[in-house]
Length: 285
Ligand code: OGA
Ligand code: MN
Image (cartoon, rainbow, N blue to C red; front, side, top):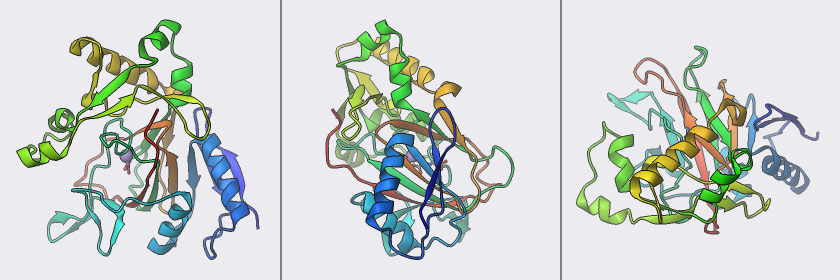
């Protein structure tokens, strides 16, 4: 049976109906999925309650090489490709990262080559409305809608990205980075506007703005520009809000979207997910 693709919102997103997990994806179905993904930016699969880790890995691998080096993150025993996001506890400790990324970000933006995609499978999620939703912004649309003079201010600009700068802002509860960790996190440089290598479209690429310093501008002016771009990009007209149901799986294009988990009480709600991270082999330009 073929799959059906149903658009989800004006901003981005499409639901894939009829994916059969019981056998490997044939090439034609994969090409349909891939084209739909490039067009919709985020694909939503529903009711994949029974998707096994092996099936999750197999589909993810059709899209590219998986990250097996999720430094300092909690991964599944025996499966370094599976990042665990979880508020569940074992021996009094969270079995995964409990919070998701509760600030607007691009996965692995602090690497020279950030992730190409994330594929997140929800095994258990809160049923309370609006708790632990995930927001995705369309960064093509945000770029295209910028005022002419703002476009002029960002086109051709480079962002110096420092994980050391953002760490205490994003993780006030985590221990500060040691000197050895700081030395391991070298700054990287990304264009503020990137051209998607497959669609050829331009997208804002600002990542977690607390990590950035805009090259060629006084620091406070650059910081203000990054914050202005973030506030612009996360306007409701560019954003799709995913309200999770158990069994959902989301595949996002990390090269042209921006995402954030909404804050929730990690000690109150049960939320348990597995993510694969699909790597890219081209530096953003
Ligand atoms: C991620 C992420 C958000 C969430 O998995 O990369 O940012 O809502 N997750 O858990
Ligand atoms: Mn993320």
